[in-house]
Image 1 (cartoon, one colour):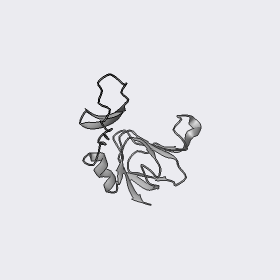
Image 2 (cartoon, rainbow, N blue to C red; image 1 turned 90 degrees about the vertical axis):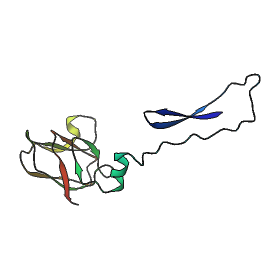
Image 3 (spheres, one colour; image 1 turned 30 degrees about the vertical axis):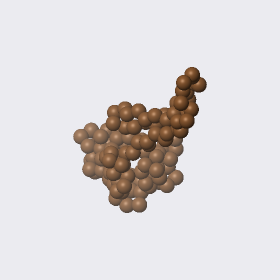
Image 4 (tube, rainbow, N blue to C red; image 1 turned 180 degrees about the vertical axis):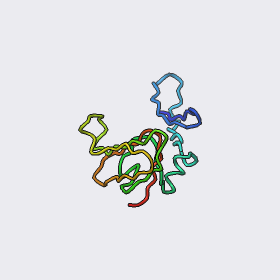
Length: 129
């Protein structure tokens, strides 16, 4: 077996290759461990090191990507949209609660929620736990 590292878009990806026995192949070569990519310099990695306080459009897993608590927005040009979800199947019964506020608003992400979804470009900032 031989390990190699491939550089794609500035990220090193490791792979293990299994070589077929061929005549003249040096069998004394020990497998080499490929370097593992590190995102320590990426914006996402540095963001996880400090506590994130604001979220925009997206679906976030409660407890892993967004903490439970109260969130506020100043609103947006076209209003805001939020959903508290029990799963991400997209079915109507997945929605625990939703809102389409215009102007400054608040909403609460509960510990029992599985996901929260924000749309229409508003920024939601955590105000309390």
